[in-house]
Length: 333
Ligand SMILES: [Mg+2]
Image 1 (cartoon, rainbow, N blue to C red):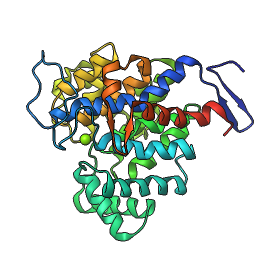
Image 2: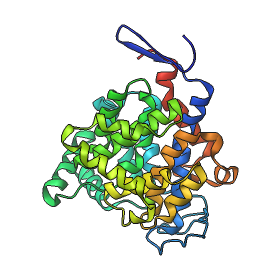
Image 3: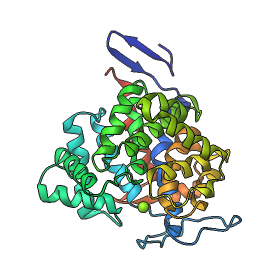
Image 4: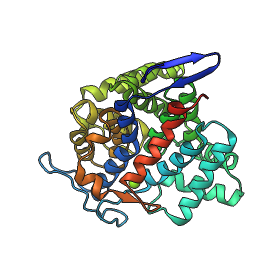
C-alpha cells in the first residue's frame, strides 16, 4: 500500500494519509476556531465595511478575551474529544459521550449558548438522560415550534468528517446523527452532510468539490433545493446571506465567502464581513478552509492567539483533529 490510497480487504478499509493530507486534517478544528475567534468581536454588530480587516480583539457578546473562541468551537471540541477516542460516532455509546460533554459544557464552559441548543440542553438535563433524552428534547422542540433548523449543528460539524475519510456513507450517517442531538429538522442534518462531504474531499484531495458531491448523500426530494441554494451562494456576493441564523443562509454565507476567495485568510475575512452571526459563519467556513488549505495556511499570529474552553490552544486543537483522523490513518476498522 502507498500513502494516500484506500485499499479494501473484505469488509475492512484502511486509509493511509500522506503528509499533505495530514496537514489538511490538522487544519479542520484550528480553522474553525480561528474563524470563530475572528468573528466573535463583530457578532450581531454593524457589518464591517468592505475595507475593514477583522481582528481577534475579543469583546463581542461574551465578553471574550482577545483570540478566545466561543460556543461554536467549544461544542465542536466536545464532538472532537469523542471522535478522537471512539472513532466511530454512530454508536449510542459515542452519542452519549457527546451528549454528556454538551451538558457538562453548558454547566461549566458555555460562554454563550444558541437559543435552540439552550432549550434542548435544559430539557435533557431535566430528563436526566443522555443522547436519547437529547434527541427526544430536540424532537419535542420541533413539535412545539416547527423551527429547529438553526445554524447550531452546522457550526460544530466539520470534525465529524475526520474519522470517516475512507467511508463517505458512514460519514453522512454520523453527521446526521450528531446534528439531530440538538437539531431535529432535516435541513440541519442535510447541511451537516454537505459540509462534512466538503471537509472529507478537501482533506483527501485539496478541492472544494465535496460540497456539491454531498448532494448525492441527501434524500432525492431535497437535492434540487440544496443544488439551487449552493448555486445562489456561488453567484453571491457573500453579503446577501444575512441574516444567517437559519442553517440555509448560514451555509450559503460560508460557501459564498469560500467560493469568492482563494486562500484561508481571505475566506475567513470574507465570512466575517458577511455580518450578523459572524463567529458562526466564520467557524463554519473555517472548518472547510482549514481542510482545504491545511494547518500550514493558518497565519502564525492567529495560531498564537486562538484559545478557549476547556483551556485549549492551537496545538491542542491540532492534536485533537489529528487523533480524530487517526482511525482511518492508522488502523483497520
Ligand atoms: Mg458563538
